[in-house]
Amino acid sequence: MSLKHLLYAVLLGACVATTGVLAQTGQPAAQPEPSAAPAADTPPAAPASSAAEPAPPPAAAPAPAPRSAATSAPPGGPVQNIVLVHGAFVDGSSWNGVIARLQKKGYRVASVQIPLTSLADDIAATRRVLARLSGPTVLVGHSWGGFVITEAGSGADASKVVGLVYVAAIAPDIGESSVDILKRGPQMPAGSGMTKDSSGFIWFDPARYHSDIAADVPENLTRVLVAAQQPIAAKSFEEHATQAAWRYKPSWYIVTTRDRAVSPEIQRWMAHRIGATIVETPSSHLMPVAHAGATADAIDRAAKEFGKE
Image (tube, rainbow, N blue to C red; front, side, top):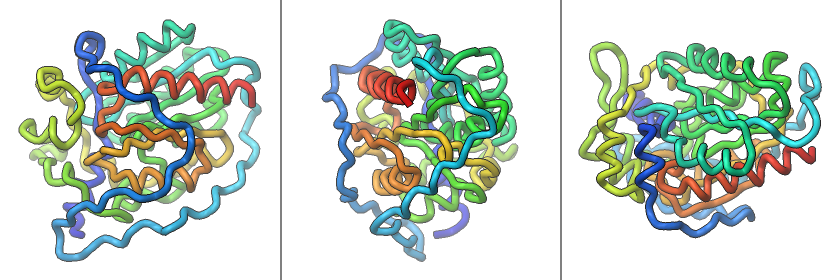
């Protein structure tokens, strides 16, 4: 697979965000609730478009690294705060439907507006939000947002973070980039829908947005997402993780089994590697918009478990 294709494939790891009204007013029909049990690694094969076939992910993910002690012990008691981090091609309003449901459950919720200009900038934006909160907090990342929470959930500044939830997200280990992870699996259809502009930012083809990112989102809502999409700096996907919060904090992973951006087999591989509790949902990549109820319910269940720990 060429570097260009790898970069484009990774770019998917950045999808998801919508406008405030869209997630609240355009919810599709109720979807089946996800199963909390891990599923067998049997994702459908995806076509490769480059001459070199990418190596498939390992048949079995390596055993998760033992959790080391955090720099400072996280606060105990029930989770009070949920911090949501979006992916690329839009903004934090992609979480609106999820926010409304979590607020009804009694959580204090914050949706970070990451600039998508670099990994460092996105981490800084997330940490600014964390700094304003007190009490046990759960970090949730969708797609590219998973890379961000892996870093932002580490270190003394994140001592209040008691757990991580990944939603079809990139979960790197120290020294890995998004490209390093996504090249382990098949090239996904959404990979060819990316275009880099003269400023080094990647946009998603409006004509491909519904089919490759948001297949189970109503088309009228998809058009709003396309109009509001925010590009991501191409360099972000080649940046390497320097910290990995999942090594010493518990995690959950929501696998989207109908994803055409980040392959389900790579999602499962990452989830097993980090030792996450796995939830599977028949969803496209844009699960926070397409299945806000199921997403909120899974986050709520995870938060309750983290609170017990």
